Each structure stands twice: as structure tokens, then as C-alpha cells.
Image (cartoon, rainbow, N blue to C red; front, side):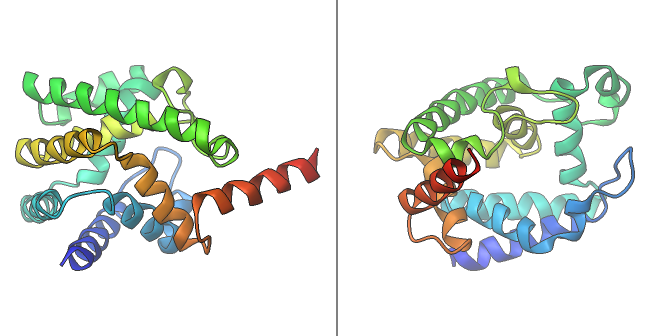
Length: 209
């Protein structure tokens, strides 16, 4: 059931991703379905089935009404990476309720703590990824925090609440949701564990030095 939900979500997201318009023209990542599928399916592995089912419903409803949730996600990110440009397009985006802002802040706080934990446990893998906090944003680099906030802002209140519940349950059980995502990613790239992947990257880094 979970695998089917994820497959359907990734397929719908890919279709929307193909329609995202970039200022500089079509991005190279829009022609790389393999990487897109790995990244999106790995992220979904950390989700509960109710949250996945709700998000799939979001995507279905958006498609039926002509909304592109991926376009909206990247537009939301511009609030932090390109604020002047964002000010010109903000009126095209659905307004967010105050409760949505509160949940996004709470989810981001937990997620950033998870990311910090990962950077301590697996530093060499972490250095290969995005900067963790929005303080590292530039017009050309989007942090984990900003990417997360942009995506969370596209979820329906129902999906956001279910996602938050999932995050809280993981935190209470001492489960690092971000580590689940990273482990699933590395597995799809052929590694048996995060420790193995971190060691491979460490050795490559040392050889370059």
C-alpha cells in the first residue's frame, strides 16, 4: 500500500515538475527522472500512510483545478532566496492561514535538529548536500530549511496536520525522520548503510586532498 502511494505521488509530481517554468529556461534536473524519483520516493519513505494518502489527494485535487504544487513550492522558496522577485509573484500564491505558519515553524524546528544530528553522525555525506539553515540561502543555493518550508506551504491543512503528527510521533520514539530519508536515498544508490556511504565519501575526500 505504501509503495503504491509513493509511486503514484512521484508520478504526479514528475508530471507537474515538467511544467515548472524557470526564468533561465528549462532546468537540467527536469530531464533527469531517475534522480527525481530517487529523491522524492526517499523523502516519502519517512511519511505515514495517512499523510501520504492525504498528499496524493492534494495532488489530485490540484491537478483537477489547474494548480501546479511544484510551481508553487519553488515560488515559495523565492521568499528566502530571491525576495525582490518573490514580492512580484506573491499575489499569485494562495494565502496561508496563521495556523499553517505555526505548524511549518514547528516542523522546521524539529527537522533542523534532525539535520544537525545527521551532520554529526555522517559528516562527509552531509557536506555533499545543501546547507542546513536558511542562513545559507543564496540566489543559486537553496537550504534544506527553505526547501522544506516551501514544500510544506503547498500542503493542504489536512496533509500538514497529518505530516506534523507523523513528525511528532517519530520524535517521541527517538526516530530521526531525516535519517530515514537519507538512508533510503543511499540505498537506492547502492549503499547498504549510511555508515558505508559516509566512509566511501570520506575516502574519496581524502584522496582529493
